[in-house]
Length: 273
Image 1 (cartoon, rainbow, N blue to C red):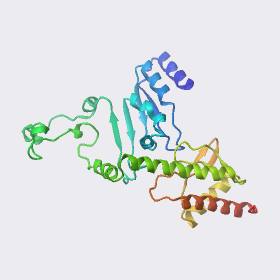
Image 2: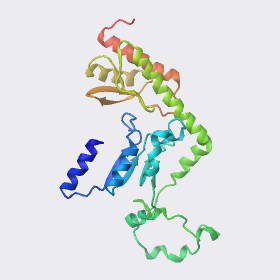
Image 3: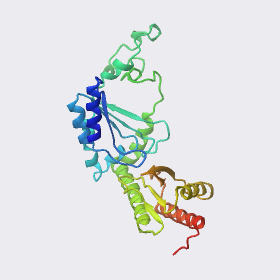
């Protein structure tokens, strides 16, 4: 927060307008949650737009146990969340919410065209009889896509099947998997937990060089069913599983840990014990 305030002050001294403050509700990299309430306060102090990037993590707010960390999302001017991540709708489904929808047509509306014929949509939505009477909510004027697929159906289908309680249960189960892995890494003499998981991402590694961990990742992907990604934490290469797959089981988590230790032991010549 001190760095943010200093950056804004420096901009203002240079005549640069602080347009927006962006907070992250669960980073895609490590799952960390920014101090959203403090960020909202800074944005208000400077008359800046407050945007929350919840692409990966915001779905966790469906869980009553996790909701307090996301409370300041209610103060945002805009929020994004990706149903194609934790809701598993399939790729290409993202959602943006804005406090003042009237701002979107000002930014994106392309204006009238003669071929669209205003009279084609002659009724209000509440008294429309057929689809030609009303275009409904003018989403075509609210974004960069004039013609867009019906992505909302994907999210609706998942929510219709799971309900709020089902989404919350999925979140809690996946966070539980992350904590289970973190506990195993914490207890194993040849594994290192690089960050305590806040959500369902775990950053850990075999206690050896980055080169060894890079080779472990390569062999995992080539020879096992465990396919984690990687990141860098405090200058160290981390093995980074992110648990959002509805089919992931506790046995899959244990298998990943076992594979990492077995491959690491083989590479370093360590004796299991």
